[in-house]
Image 1: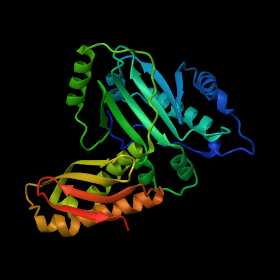
Image 2 (image 1 turned 45 degrees about the horizontal axis):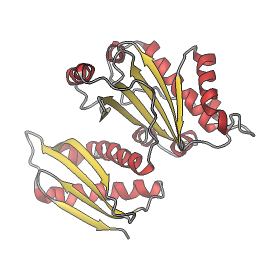
Image 3 (image 1 turned 90 degrees about the horizontal axis):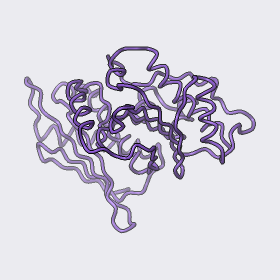
Image 4 (image 1 turned 90 degrees about the vertical axis):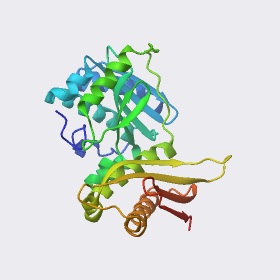
Length: 293
């Protein structure tokens, strides 16, 4: 049964420390990943590279059962395959910006588990420049069901709902089963990281946790014909049965806290490609708009 905040085990990075010279050539990264997975873990995998994204796909029988079986061997395979990707990326002469690991249901390719990692974040984690929670926020862990991406959230994960969605996707229209890797856009990745960070920090903030349930956080970046767009964050907060979520509390305590967390996150990524931040709590209608300073 899944109980950990992360589906991947915590990696030990000592063997990933960069060598004096790059080990893997940029033109043979796919072959290097396949060979390493076969040599180190005796696993046959599919590997693709699209632009600056390197991806690995591994097929398993009955993915939903494996995920909830508690079988340490299955999680060891996932961790091993991610380690293979990390080793090749960090020791290549020209590192891809993103690495993607996909664990796919062999009988239902429309149901899969996807992990996305930014190369710079991995290096920061190795150098202990990120806390454990920050490192986990910056690892995208998503279930993909019939094309719909569902973030893995151990506090909200509904096993029955997930199983029904997997069954429904299996009964839906058949799609091409070939491995097609989509290139990860940095802006899209950063929006998902922002959502992860805000879900966690809002739940950890005592005065918010005492009064409200954080049901959903959605972040998006507008694009206006190549110009800097506005970043919008939608919060879905619901008052706990014994508490009251007042508009004043949202306005004075919640929204400024969210803006502060977002500003710190974007600063850490040196991201400035937006015109301003708008934060909206959907149930109270309270809004905060902050232009770029």
